[in-house]
Image 1 (tube, rainbow, N blue to C red):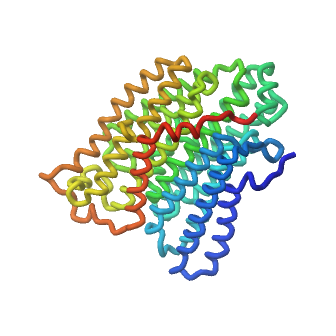
Image 2 (cartoon, rainbow, N blue to C red):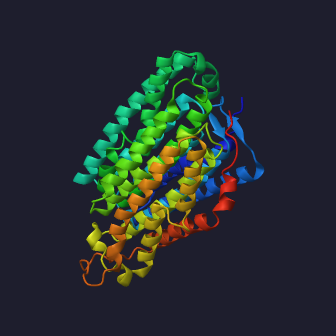
Image 3 (tube, rainbow, N blue to C red):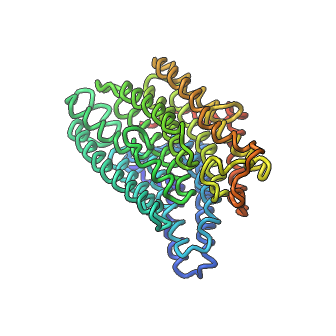
Length: 473
């Protein structure tokens, strides 16, 4: 039995920082609570260093009774999550500075981040469900952090949906155990092809229900717009980005490792869910005027594109690297857009961004890069990610899905341009305070995220080589 704790340094760093931060914050005066933020940032940096060291030495392994796999998907996912956590910390600093619950904010963020990391390497159904809970419960509290009416409503909807679909997920886990007499993916892979079809089908749908909630896909997407609008903007950035990374990598591993030879036609199911998710997200975003709700529906549509990789998980060798690269590009691009929204806290609607190119040209440039990046415009990372994921979908035999995705991509240009056009309007001006923002950390975060999006697009071929590698059984 491999119980090598060094294989879990990134996860342990976040959990350890959460405990240390909670104890430290209990004794610090309010004006020094920023020290807990520094502890969180150091933990993320330590996790990045440990992950880079693991990748450099090719130390792929399965640990703790094969419940957790450390392989290419886990390591690349860790890099994405930890780098994104640093960006979220950067855009949160001024938002929570001096708040009476500042320490609790950082601790909850670290806990839900650790749950997301646990999802990446989950190689057992029970581990998967435990990671789901760890990633979800602190996020419910974060959604209500402001303790106002919109935040309370957002947290309640988030919690109720999570509790309902978490229960469904646990029931699905029980059914898959009944069908395969095991919870480990390799054992399920051997047992499920000869198991009762009904048990496997219903069990898989139950487990997928929980993962669809985590990533905000149809039909478990209803919480996304309300939570994005009601939660503090950095929290909205988190819930529309990080859970997708954990949930999609976890779903990919489950389908690829536990059900490759199952009689259940899950590739078609995932293809249909991808088609409906991307289409509904785009259609709902068309006439949104709230910038946060527009980004929420944009996040739903992006999940549709990402689900395409899961639909061809066992049908194309391009699926894994296209999924991981797209996740990295999307995380940077989406967080860049949210960082601008965080900086301009008085600009809540599209008309509030009128004349931004004249008053804040740097932030306007970030929005141009990030919004056109979300469309899939070169030379941003999402362009290369979409190209890879469309190629994988065609290679996997779902040409119709790739064609629909291209049509949705073209259609999405409409609502992103509805946001971009006012930036360059000179005949009308936004409210006087709409473009005021003195948040140095948030602005730096916005520029950094936009720069990462461009780097991933320009140097994408080098990054893609890091995403190639087998999943451990």
